[in-house]
Length: 147
Image: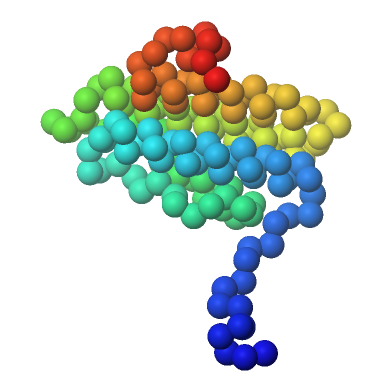
């Protein structure tokens, strides 16, 4: 194989289990949405770094959970002049909803016969609608009036 045609980077291998793949897709969409919200809210410079790597593996999902917990701790405890309380409350709410999505997804992957995917879907819709409300201020998003 010529040097120019040789692959330069290996793509990450996706998990074989369809339940895991589906939940990782939901978590990656939530990670991207949370990054947009954090950027929109203009939080202080002390805010923990949000992961930018795609959530295509369980290791990345565990890293996402750790970043979410760090963001929750920051939103609860951090007080400085640059912090706006309403923005910190919104960050705390969204981080808690993301943690709920992570937990429901983990339960579905571990025991799909007991925990249906609808629980993870419900948590994802609640997170998405709340993130939309935080960024737009439109209460119709919380009422399910916007897609």
